[in-house]
Length: 196
Image (tube, rainbow, N blue to C red; front, side, top):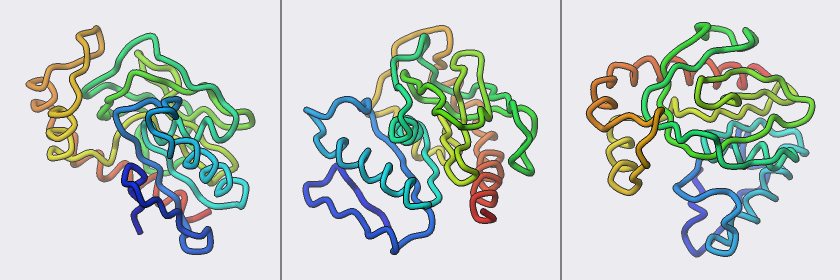
C-alpha cells in the first residue's frame, strides 16, 4: 500500500497492515514542518514503527527522517551531491553487495549516525551514506530505486546549484547503464530485510 503524505487526506496504515515500511522523500528538508505540517506526523509514525519492531528502509530524505526518528541530528551537508557517485561499503553485512559501486545521489542534507547503529557506507562528498540499526532498520542516503523516468521528473522540478559533486544532466544521462546495477543492489538490501 502507498501513503502519499503530501495529499490533504493523510491516512497512516495500522502497524499490523505491513511487514516493511519504506520511507521516501521529496524536495523539502525534514525540518520544514511549518510549510509541510505532515512531516511531524511522519517522524512520529516512523519512530512508532521502529519501536514496535517493524522493518524500515529509508531512502534519501527517508533515511534522514529515519535517522531523526532514532534521535540523530540531520543538517546541511558540506557539499550538494547530485549524479552518479561512488559509494564505498564499510561493512560486508549485506550479502551480494560489491565493496564499492556508483549510485544516484540527489541531496544537500545529511544525517548523523544514530546511536547503536552500524555505519554501512560512505562517499567522498558525504560520509554517512548508509546505516543499519537493530538488524532491521536501514537508511540509504543514495537512490537505488531511481529510474531514468524518475530522474527526468526530479530534474524538471529541482535545479541543484553548481558544485564539485554536482553532475550535469548530460553526465547523468551518460551513466544510464548504472540503473540496471541499481536494481540488483536494492534487491540485496530488500533480501537482507526480508530474512530478518
